[in-house]
Length: 459
Image (cartoon, rainbow, N blue to C red; front, top):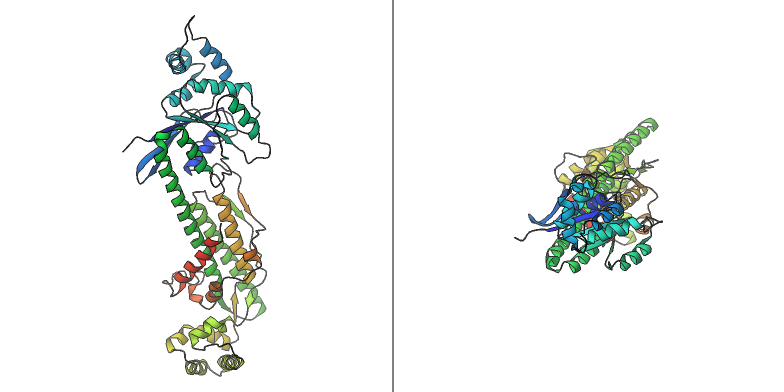
C-alpha cells in the first residue's frame, strides 16, 4: 500500500481555503468558516480513502497575511555573494527566531508545504490582482513543490477570473482550476484532480481511483434520493381517508390531511439532506397550498375494478356493463348484497374483505378524501428542485435553500406517471395511513418503477 498523496491548501487570509476543503471532503463541519480574517490559526488535515486505503490527505493551513514583509526578510537572509536555493532559504527562516515570532503563521504554512507533495493555491477570484498576492506566490515557489491555483467564488457576478488567469500566466502558472466552493460545477472535482495528475504523474492512478469512487457514490446518492422521493409520492397518492360528509367534519379532515402530508414531506426533505451530508434546516419549504381535497369514486377506478374482478374492455358494451356493476355495488341494500354482486363479477372473498371498509363507507354516506393531483405535482417538483440544489451545492454554502416556484414541464403540465394512478387504488401502500403495516404487495415494485422514472428525468 503506497503512501497517500499529501496536498497543502494554501493562500491569503479569508480566500475560502476551509470552504474548499469542506466541499472536497463533503463535510460541512470541517474547520471554521467566517468572514473574519485569520479564522484558521493552525494546520488541520482531512483524509480521503477508498475501500479503507487512504489515497489523499488535504491540509488546511492558516492564511498568509504579511507576504510583502516576509519576502523582504527572505531576501535579507542571503549573505553577501550567497545565492540560496528556495527550499534552503525557507529552511533557514524556519530555523530562526522569526518563525516563532513575527512570521509564526506563515511558518506553519511553509512547513506544511515543504512536507507535502504539492500545494493548492486558493484565490478569491473577486479580488483584484495585488502585489501581496504576487509576493505570496514567489514565496511559495521557493518550496519547490508543484502549485495549482484554484480560483474560488467564480460563480459570483463580480469575479475577475480572466485578470487572474493572465496574472498567473505571467508568473509561469499556466494550469489553473475554476472551482467555486459554494456552488461547485458538476465536473469540478474531475477537472481539479485531472490537473493535479498532470503536475504529479506518479499520483495519476490514485487520483483516478478517487474520481471513480466519487462518481460511483454520486450515482448511488442519486438512486437513493429518487427512491426517497418516489416513496413520498406513493404515500401521498395512495393516501385515502373515509370521512363524514358533514361540512365541519370535512374541514377538520382536510386540515389534518394537510398537516400530515406536510410532515411527511418534511421527513423526505430531512432524509435527502442527510443523504447529501447537509445539516437539518438547510432547506426551507413553504406550506403546501392544500386548499381543497380530492373527492370522487376512486374506489372504482380501473385498477380497483381489476382487483374486484371487473375487467374493463375498450368497447361501449363493456363500459356499460362495468357502469351497471358499479351502480349495483353502491346501490345495494346491504354490504353483504354488494359483496355478493362483487363476487358474481369475479372477485374473491379475500379481495372483497380488503375493500369492505371502503364499500361500507359508500353505503353509509361517507366520503373518501385523497390528495389532489396538483399537490402530487407540487410535491414532485419541490423534491426534484431540492435534489438539483443539493447536487450543485458545496458544503461551504451557508445560505439556506429556498424551494419556491419550481419549473418542470413534465410534472407541471404532462400526465402523472401511471404508477401514481395505480397507487390510488391501493390505500394500503400509503405509510401515511398504515405506518406499521408490513410491506404491502406491489408497493415496492411501484416505488422502484417511479424511482426509475424520476432518475431518468434528472439529467
